[in-house]
Image (cartoon, rainbow, N blue to C red; front, top):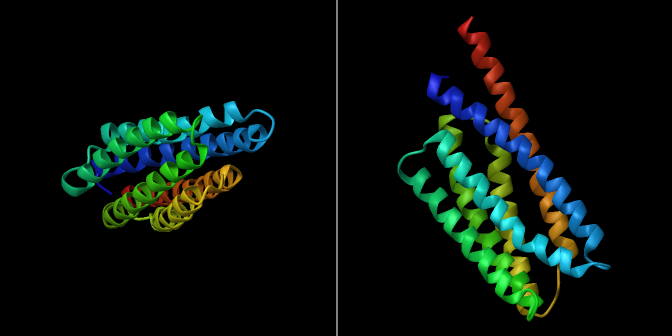
Length: 188
């Protein structure tokens, strides 16, 4: 691995582990507040795409991607910001619509994550978990859109969605750690 690739892999690995922890905590908070404190769960629903935007911006700064990888991350940040705004505008008046908006964001973010995973697979390796995560997010997004438009509140399912995402990020972080260890051994 070249120096820039090593630094990118290191920052990406660290980001994956931080995302793992955040998503587990977020899922636990949603699942524990959805019935008794729905206002708290609503705020958490708004926060989730904003967290993704923050992670995307960090990744852009740390890895300095070029070309289509940069474009997909910028689109992802814009999509997450729009989703948070849409959720905030609908969560208290039309909560099922906010689930549909979350689903549209999950679908779009999943497609973009799938693309990013494929690009990074060639550059860094160890991205199969992110590719699977993108595919799962895309499928879950469709389910959330259809459910939300059908008037169903899938708030508990959102916790499961975040837990699966955490698992994928943890696996991605472990795979990148192994790749980084191999690079160190090769340099010796």
